[in-house]
Amino acid sequence: MRIILLGPPGCGKGTQAKMIVDKFGIPQISTGEILRGAVKDATPMGLEAKKFMDGGLLVPDEVVVGIVKERIQKKDCQNGFILDGFPRTLPQADALKKVLSSLGLPLDYVISLEVDQKALIERLSGRRTCRDCGRGFHVAFDPPRCAGKCDVCGGELYQRDDDRESTIEERLNVYGRQTAPLIDYYRKEGLLVTLDGMEDIPSVWGNIQQVLAGCMG
Ligand code: ADP
Ligand code: ADP
Ligand code: ZN
Image 1 (cartoon, helix red, strand yellow):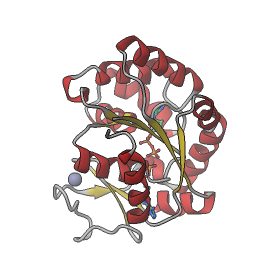
Image 2: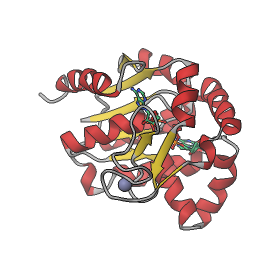
Image 3: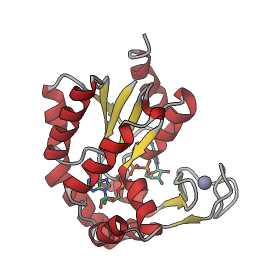
Image 4: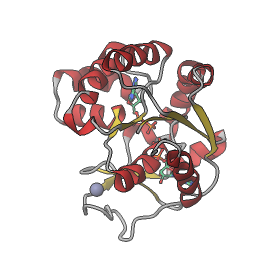
C-alpha cells in the first residue's frame, strides 16, 4: 500500500497517518517531522531548513526530495508507506514519480482531505505536538487524557513555533500557491480520492479505511 496524504496544513494528514500506521503497520514518512528532528539535532540540514520553516516557507525541493528518496528505499518500506506532507510542489511530485517508477513501486492512491480555511486556522492554533513521538493533539478537538502529556508515550506536548497565528497565514498562502496545484496533477494521473476533512476524526478515519480496503487485495 503506497499512498500520499494531501491537503493544507491542519487538514488532518498527520492524525490520520498515525492511525494508518497503527492499523496497517506501514511507516509514515512525514517530511515535516524529519525536518523538525534535524532542527532539534542541529544538523547542517536542520540549520538550513529552520530558516524556511520559521517563516512558513517551503524548504528547497532538493533537500526534501533527497530525504524522501533515501527513506523510501529503507527496508521497512517494502510493504508500503504513507507520504504525509510530501510532495508539496510540482517539481517534488515529478521527482517522486521518477524515483517510484525506477523502483517499480507505483502509488495506489492520493487521498486529498478538504477543509475550509476557518477550520484550518482553528485546528492549527489549537494543535499541540509531542516532542518525543510527534503525535498531534488539539486542545479542544482531540485533547490528551492528561493535560500537557502525550497519551501514547508520555512525552511533553508543545506548540510548534509555526503554529502561531502570524505564521499560519503565510503557510496557508504558500499551500494555495505551491501545493494546491497537485490536486489537479494527481487527478490527471487518475490517483486522486477526495474526502471531506471537515468531519470529525473518527468519521474521516472510517472513510479512509474504506478507500484503503480497495488497495489491500
Ligand atoms: P496536518 O498534519 O494535516 O497538518 P494534523 O493531523 O496535525 O494536520 O491536524 C491539525 C490539528 O487538527 C491537530 O491539532 C489535530 O488534533 C486536529 N484535527 C485533525 N483532524 C481533525 C478533525 N477531523 N476534526 C477536528 N480536528 C482535527
Ligand atoms: P503541517 O503539519 O502543518 O502540514 P509539516 O509538519 O508537514 O506541516 O511541515 C512543516 C514545515 O516543514 C513546512 O512549513 C515546511 O517549511 C517544511 N516542509 C515539510 N515538508 C515539506 C516539503 N515536502 N517541501 C518543502 N518543505 C517542507
Ligand atoms: Zn508522544
